Image (tube, rainbow, N blue to C red; front, side, top):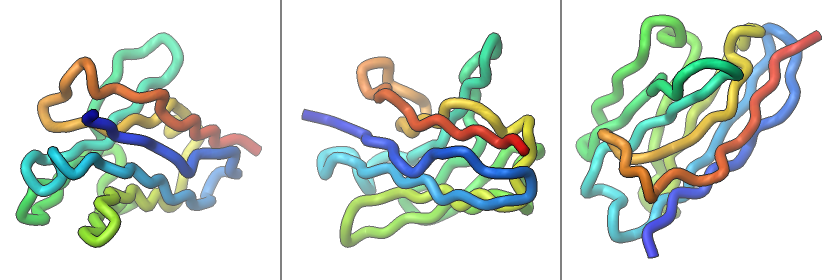
Length: 115
């Protein structure tokens, strides 16, 4: 069964940091680019960072220089290190392939940035 399972969200003050984790099924890890997406209340779900199977990473402008996507091959995990968090980063964060596959969406992990 193909799965991508997110964890690591929480409540953090503005300027703080969080690291999200996405454990990826063996059948898709290293075969597809993986992206971190987020969906804020009332908004669409959009990709914020992605990493290709060769390690090349790409970011949306609003998170560039603050977020870093990385992979750990041994445990098939894709991380999203988020620094200098802002209230506008508040959202549910998901991981999925690039492009996303509907049946791969998980529950996501809530990130709330608030003082």
